[in-house]
Structures are given as C-alpha cells and as structure tokens.
Image (cartoon, rainbow, N blue to C red; front, side, top):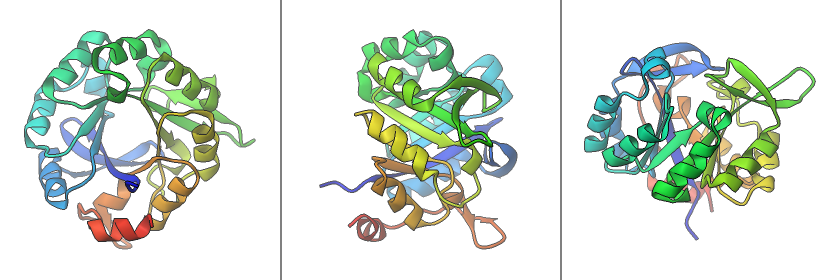
Length: 252
C-alpha cells in the first residue's frame, strides 16, 4: 500500500512566498521558484500553491508566475486563488497545473466544480474548505480568505462538493493555521467520514507526528506550511522536507 501523501502548502502574495498565522500576520519567507527547486531536490510528493494576495482577488491568477513555476516543478502541483470562471480553469490546466483548487467560487458558483470536472476529470478538481470554529465549538465554512462566514456546515459542504464532481477536499482549520500545535482532528474525522473522496488535512502541523495523527483520523494526505519553511524555536526560514525513509517509517 502506498503511504499517505505529504504536501507542502505554499502561500503566494504579490509574487513572493508568505506564511500566515490564523490567516493573518503574513510573513515573507522567500521566492517561490527557489522553493520549487529545493522541493524538486527533496523529491516531494506534490505541491500546493494558494495565492492569498489582493492582486489575485482583483485580477485573477498570476498566470506568468504560474507558467514559471510549471516550467520548474518536477512534481505535480495544485493551484488556488482568484479563480473566478471556467476560462481561468482552462488556462490553469493548459499551463500544466494538475489540480485546480476552488474555494470561494465553489460556494458562490458551485456549477464551476462540475464544469471543471468535465474538463479534466474529478482528479483535477480540489475544493478547498476553510473552516472556523466558534466559541461554542460549532464549525462554519468561511470564504474570501476566511473573512466571510457562510454559516455552512463543513460536512454538508464537503458532501455537496463531492456530488458536484470534486475529486478531493483540502480541509483547512483557520484557528490552527500557522500555530504548529497540531491539526483539528475532530474536524478531520468528521469530514473524512462523511465523504468517499480523499481529504487533505491542513492547518496546524508542527511536527511529523501531527501528519500521522491526521491520517489516523481519516485524512488521505496531510498538508503543511510552517513545518516545511521554518526551523527552530525562533522560526528561522529554512525550506526543507523529510526524507523518504523517515516518511516510510512515520506511516508504517
């Protein structure tokens, strides 16, 4: 059996890489092309790029930057951010993006999920679900970079996205993002049990054992940002990735 996928999740803003904490406090961590080259050498499973900048929100994906990334990346990668219509989806696939990641648009225009699946098959369509937990412990799907609460239950939303043709769910716990304190395992379990498509856990990984915990709770893969870009107590920037043997051992 193949071990679980372990995916660096990289945030783009204005052409650079940043890392956030709870979707805020974006800190610059380097150049995306340089990061891709390092991850090539590390032989990562796949990469995810999410553009959280205002340029993407206003103008759509930065296709020039994505063309450069596609020409450098030796591994499959997914992209999300500023995708507003099916033409954007077509251009992303044409550039070599293997997985188009839909978030806000999947809530506002859910038909785009089916349209995208019709272009490239379900395996090329990922719906990213950003979830906030309120003081009562209730989960709610948020869009527009976590700023707008849709009042939707993440389980019901994930089930609808699967029905529309999504091949994968990227499940991000906003309250855990960048904290390095571990995934929201209750959220992972709840969504993974409710759908038959793969769920990628995101938000909170701070050590390798956290990745295993998410998989043990039903995730098919685990994504992380801080874990792969920061090193040590003072969070010096060091882009890294575990070696193959360590991952094999982790998921035995």
